[in-house]
Image 1 (cartoon, rainbow, N blue to C red):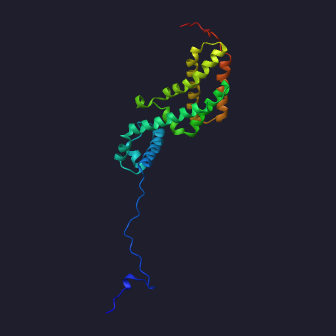
Image 2 (cartoon, one colour):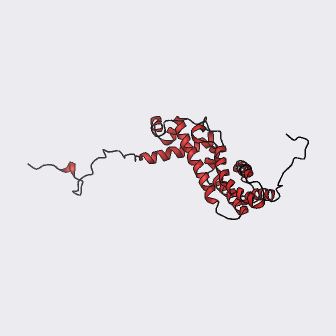
Amino acid sequence: MAIDNSSASNSKGKPSPAPATRRARRVRMTGAERREQLLDIGRTLFAERGYEGTSVEEIAAKAGVSKPVVYEHFGGKEGLYAVVVDREMRQLLDMVTGALTAGHPRELLEQAAFALLDYIETFTDGFRILVRDSPVAQSTGTFASLISDIATQVEDILGLEFKARGFDPKLAPLYAQALVGMVALTGQWWVDTRKPKKAEVAAHLVNLAWHGLGNLEARPRLIGHRKN
């Protein structure tokens, strides 16, 4: 008796394709990839809404995962925020310290100004996060502490210049804080306006700093009535 194979073959005698029984599998991220994804999403949300305005639920939703995944990687929102802030602080500090390569003091001022403005331009979200008051400052530091770290780099340079020009090198830390603070606060203003252009902003900052330093009084005095 002949066996009917028509159900397994098409009209040309070729086997009919088996019905699709498997759904396309979702590509799973590695743990490291998921961590980086959550950091990127967290950075964007923290920059837009701040720490208090961002929720674990929203971070998880944008990543397409459940809340426990966020807790698994960072222990919660605070842990994620701390890692984001720490990364941004290291990025900015590395850019500034790495830029200080020139020998002439005025060019060093230019390099420091450009480094901060470059960071603001390239890592705008990170800068917006850094200038906010951190709710986890005890573990990550603050923008003020970061500026102090940068000022320490400038302090050594100023100390040598002060000594060479006959000024008290013990005052270098004060002037370093003033100079770096001036650039940092100007950067906070420029991050929103973006005018004038970056090079022009750097030139004006250095103009004020350099010509001010160039006309320093060995013993500055107050001319008003108040003396203490």
